[in-house]
Length: 259
Image (cartoon, rainbow, N blue to C red; front, side, top):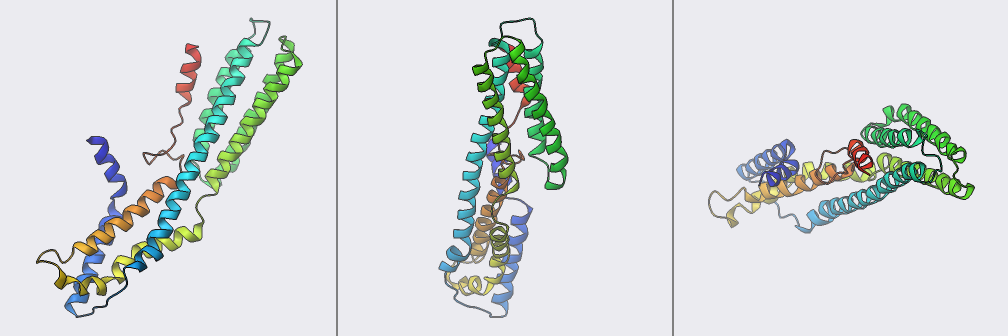
């Protein structure tokens, strides 16, 4: 029950109540001054609902891609740790310990970066590529520890896939739903329940007493809730919405310690 209320609180917020209050006031004002009009209902679907649902679908697809890219990043990083631990003939090297810490540092850095804005990203990206450079040097130590050249080549492929997965996550983070489409949707979502006041006023006689404002309230709640859902799905890495991707470097390190 608690989780259900938390989910409800994410889609019903202060914006919902502000737009609802303005829609109710607009409807009252138009009814009081006899400003009525029969606007077509299909306008809501064509102008607002369809673009918003398209944006939500696009954001959900991007989240699924982000999950796949993060899995690639984490999976190949863990594979490098196992290679440093199991493929070497000499078991006295501290390479596995350093590799385990490197996996933790990479995942921790990715988690921080994916919550940053574009102005903070450049500095962090330089630090990330510094970690990639250290990781590359560490993989070259495998030669001196008895790992065959073919297996070293495979390890280099793991490193390449980690970098590619990171770059894919960067693209998902920086390039989201088209800005113009989001702006269009937000503008119409916020002003639609207000400018539709004449239409809501024209339907007052169709409802029983005390139910006249049901339509403006419903329209406001539905449209703003859809916009809030889109906002939470827009960035799958910020860990604000319940559908966001959870990145836990400490948990990964703990699993590696247990194996």
